[in-house]
Image (cartoon, rainbow, N blue to C red; front, side):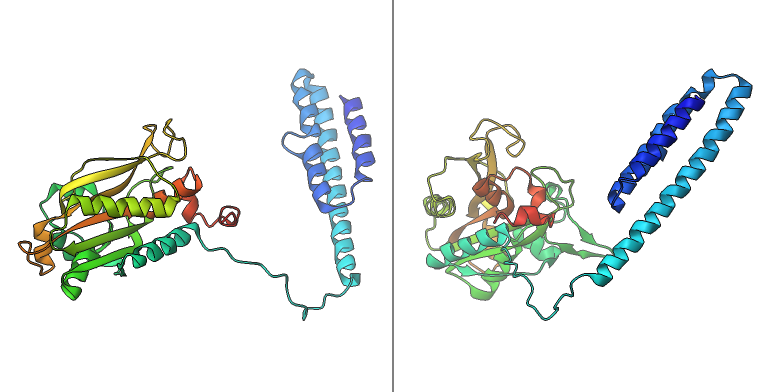
Length: 340
């Protein structure tokens, strides 16, 4: 074992002379003195020696380790001093020269939101906004979801500590009632914005995401008007026909209510993590506005009717660009954002 230690030290000195930078020195130190380094490998054989040999070799190994550690420290100081000298003698930088221009990127959600706003404005819709911090009344009560209603369990809500009357809005639907109260009928409006749900994240769920709410109120509005606008929406955003299905769905603020699903554009209907291996993505809840919601908006349901829909912007962008994980949007990863 003594021979192995001597051979190790000779190799150590030979390789040390070839080290020219701090990164190489770091790797060199790990190779020889790390927990799984060359010296440690040799010392594992101490258990096979007699007690007397173990003591002698152990003392020699400790002395060798201390010496090698000192040599590495001296080498590090030498390289650091060299770097300082190189910087001092390096070509001076003209700090008045303009920096390299970096072109920014509009977030993909913002891109699609602006496209949708242009599309709906071309059909005569207003583009409205509302508060992120919403009252319990507008977020639930005015949308036909009283305190005892089981539908509240459908949305895991962030309540404000010490004030149960304020919530981080769980959808953009509260602006429906605000808009009706302000503008009356007839009315056509969309409401893009950020919403919040107190839930665990995975490839298709986020606690902070974006929706776009749509509302149209006029006389004799029917499901046919709803379907026509939805087809216009999907064709405008995907630039081609998208296979859809309409199935019954329950939402307290519409009656009747529907789920509009699109065939998953990530896997083409074969099944993946985004569509939960069903081949379909739940994209667009919709329906005819419930009479109680019209009443909260000070609109007479005997004279007026309307439809409403809610669209998840994050999932729409995922379908548009083939993104397979919703968590990328809030990651702040420039490698992701620079693709757009």
